[in-house]
Image: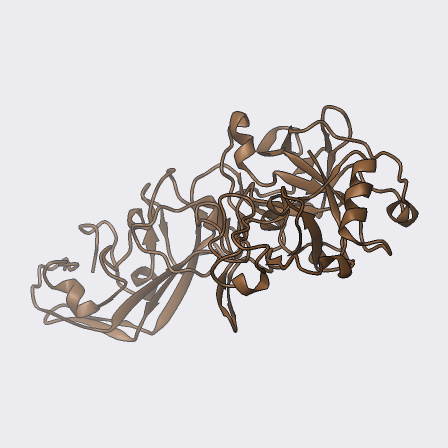
Length: 431
């Protein structure tokens, strides 16, 4: 048998399950070591259809009988015999590194690699009427090839807390926390929107606070990169790095904050440093020679000060405290893009009716993960960062001086009625 006019002869299982790259390189089960060193395709932009194999590009399974007949005619006999019989089947599966099935015409991407290409054959036989020998026996077998595209390393995802970032099922209905598929991946986080420095404002995050962090997931790097801390122009906000590997680095924000629990309790707190915003940060990963390998940029537009839980947690006290440190109490739109409509509307009251957070707004009273749509919409559940173990959300003011409680886990807006008795934490923001 042959699928390329006789250049590749198939006489045993090793050849039946072989693949051939577009440059003519043949890889068989015997020579396959791709589980250790993935196969790299010869050319950028290639799809699985560029990889030669016995299974035709328009199918994922086929019988050997079908292969030797029309329209494939994957048969050639050196003696010219025209009479042949065959038994057995071949099958193919291709999944990306997230175990998602992909088709033969899929162009490989570095962020979804390595791909697993599994070829499987059942027991079978090829037999001609004449010749010595006149048959080839194939035992049941399978092989998995791990394949990467030809591509340079890139930042694939910027991953904050993911807990509330999927489609969740609750008693009041389905809560779809997912943002647009071009922006948010429920398993990996935010997708970089731009590598152009002039458009870094499109990337996550646009909001920040002390010690909050996210992970950059890197594709295509075969070594751990080095990252140098970055500080903004006035030295008040900085970025530090940890947990470095060839596929990941943790990015943590440092900046202005209330210095102590006594300061947070004080009725006359000291001023807190005010950062110069908006401020652009460019993070660069370098190899062992100092050469730039990947970069990621973002533009912070707001900085938050977490007040924690204090004995004077009533809204007007939060307003006064935030003003004294040089900030303001966060509004609903600073925290969430939820709206008092649709699913979860009942959590609001007549004073909150029609209340809408940041835009683009969610059609329901829970956030959707969107860049630039509020602190919770970007970062998710603050409780999971180990920096805000005070509670589940913040008291928020609004432009008409109404008060609300905004939950961190879902971004939901709660009733303004009787909030003065709730004693919930506050968050100050600048600007």
